[in-house]
Image 1 (cartoon, rainbow, N blue to C red):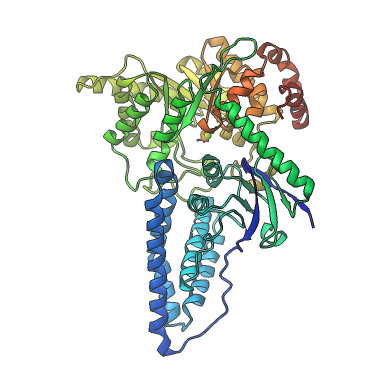
Image 2: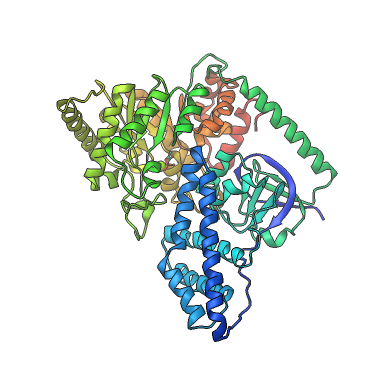
Amino acid sequence: MRMLLPGHAASRGSALGRARIRLPHALDVVERRIGVGEVAGERERLRQAIAATREEMHRMRERLHGALAREVGEFLDLHALLLDDPELLKGLDELIHAGRYSADYALRLQRDRLAAVFEGMDDPYLKSRMDDLDHVIGRIHAHLHKRAIETQGVAGEILVGDNIAPSELAQLQADGVVAVVTAAGSPLSHSAILARSLHLPLVVGIAKAWQRINDGDVLIVDGGSGEVIVNPEAADLRRYRQRLKDAAREQRELGRLRSKPTRTRDGVDVALYANAESREDVARAHALGAAGLGLYRTEFLFLQHNALPSEDEQFQIYRDAVLGMSGRPVTIRTLDLGADKADRIGLSVRGEDNPALGLRGIRLSLARRDVFDTQLRAIARASAYGPIRILVPMVSAREEIVTVRRRLGTIVRQLRAQGHEVAETIALGAMIEVPAAALALAGFIGDVDFLSLGTNDLVQYLLAADRNNDALGDLYSPLHPGVLQLMRQVIALGERHGVPVAVCGEIAGDARMAPLLLALGLTEFSLHPATLLEVRKAIRDSDLSRLRERAKKLLQARDRAGIERWLKAASPVGAT
Ligand code: PEP
Ligand code: MG
């Protein structure tokens, strides 16, 4: 029977395929005790299964290249480390040896023991490690049975499960999975960001998805609306085919915009900068005609290593980004570690009660002056190769910007004295993502050269709504009158003081939001290259003077519904 399951859209694209159910923690193992004579055999079976898992991860790691090697590799490394975890291995051995349990049951018991420990923790980072552990244990279990790993032989299928680890996504796509549907997860999770990079449709938040969908059911997944249709009827299939045709046409049309200017219908140029985290992003940004890089997130450089990247390593990466953009400005954001971006080097503080309100971004940099100085030196040296701007994350007070500017001045002087070439000027900007910084901006706007609205965090801190908590549903949304009013306030102050204001949160990459951002007065966006052409199209379809006339109405909206009505009325015909 046809059934429509509404979830949350996490990665766009449509797919039609049969469901492949993956039960959560599929360790449905019955208790089995073994005799003394079986102990050695069971230990050996387990040893081989662990070795096979290690080998399999190694193979997966080798197959990755480009941006995936960096993003996914990080998770594979973490999983490989878990395989060597003495706590896990010792516990398993004891269960087989002293407890006389079969290898399978020992695995299940050890998993449950560790799950109980993890469940008692409040720290979301540590909690998320349980997902990693489950993933690793699931793989060992599959090898114990010499069973093909669940993700093989799934070409053309849609994976339906509890959750999905970022490290699995690339493999799933390589195996031919056409979409993923999960019960847990959030559109802002690392998995969702990666699925979008891979163009793999992903719908999250379908409660108990694996119970409501049967193995082999035919599904239509719409990663754009977040809907999943189980056992579609003729009309659904017709609509699906039409959607595919529309998407192909759109892609063709968008392709033509590569070399076109980002100019509104009434002739105003809008600067579309790119957000980048890797060499590949830089190359794409350049190819799509981005005005420059508006946000180069440097924390990924630190996340992928087990040791701090040296000044020279950093210098080369920043210099290559500058060279890669051939003269267009490159905005390097200083380290924004902490909160959900905990590292393995041990820079970010573990066990903070409220990591999102803790030692992250510039706070961490100022607490670790050695690390910060190294980064500033590397950026300043790269400025010899083209225009570089420095963007400071999580600014909450004037003092932070003043301290950074002073430090930068000292470092530039030292570098010159040491014979290094440094650009005459390096612009310094602040991310506006902490509400207090937005409210106190008049007091330090004279201390910055530019500003960038980080709406991902601004929304989270302004609405007291965790950006990673899917349970909050629509509560976490930029479509709140308080958010728009504060954004407008920042933009107006920038206009009065001649300080450029850009927006670099995910909202900038959502073409549907372009009329709203233009109405608020923004003409600089920084967004992931994947959506640059769509946003360019939305801007080219917009009439800026008409939108500005309507801005007052937008700011008078009293609730989300009012803002949505405004957006609907303001959207160019055909856009939704
Ligand atoms: C933001 O907060 O909007 C932002 C761009 O930074 P990040 O998503 O890296 O926290
Ligand atoms: Mg942020």
